[in-house]
Length: 464
Image (cartoon, rainbow, N blue to C red; front, side):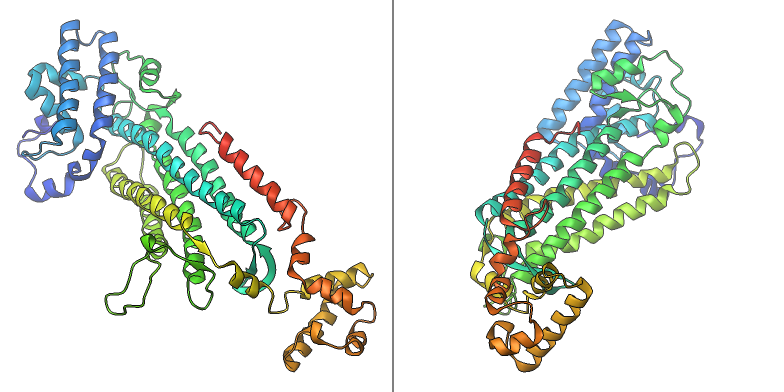
């Protein structure tokens, strides 16, 4: 079939150029957006007097029929099409005749593809947002169901201080909340209409861009035609958001993998969200978590690839920008596949609370609280830290914990405190109970945090 731009050329492009140049194999994902945008442009060109009423009716009817045909039977691709725009135009002309060629008046594929991408992301962002909120709800549900479950808190992957399981899970809630807040900004900068910018200088016809934007549901229009066709910031911002989201999911996935191991034994993964080994019958593998962790790399890759593509481009549109779509579509597909499966994995976890408590009651978890107790008795913290460290070293050497000491040995190291105070300090529940400052792991603080998280879920919108 002929090209939309073929008039200036004596010879058709070579087979090799056809293969390199085509984007229909992937930008056909934008077929519905392309038709929606064409219907809005149709309103603009009739208002501008470019077409008459009869032509308007024919073109509108033809576009609506094409939309219905695709929804009913899918894409009909017996011919070779350069892109989704040439596909829709060819179908329109075939359906209604030469008048279909008037639709492109005052429009370029440059502002057309930009519009399609804006419309596509405006559709996708609310879907991704709901999947994130579902995962957040799952985390809050677990937190509510485990208000007193104690586990080890870690730094450097070493046991550090006891924390509530609810507190640990809610850390991921707030990571995801920041992702939602970033998504609000992405949506705002996607909610801008480029149509009417044409190729670079703006349309030569008096199109009412504000009305077109209103028809399409955009909040505003691009103020500069060059910026309108050359901007891919909104895609890069979405990819940046997706990279951060996947990083957060990957961190939780890593903990799920560790916690499900025999070495930790903190959780049991539901059979529906695990797989087995083809060789070892006993294996139960955390593949959902591993795939989530693994797919993070491909999202990063697409983001960095488009950043690299865009960094040296002069204004305005360049064909390099065709590279924006495959990575974007793959990221969207990845998020839509990962988020529901990962939410399902998290929602069905069974926590081994006894094993968590046992782990939280060992490895000298009392050390920081004992140092704090000395501070309360007016010992400088650095001196208290040193003294407690010396005691921990002796415990390691003797192979027993401090509460196994007799009062005489205890008095040698800590004349300021008695054994009853040691028993209070070594109880992990007391360590938790002390930390009720805002954001702490104390029982009351975490209950407040749960209520705050539920409020955020209730009031979160794309308007920020």
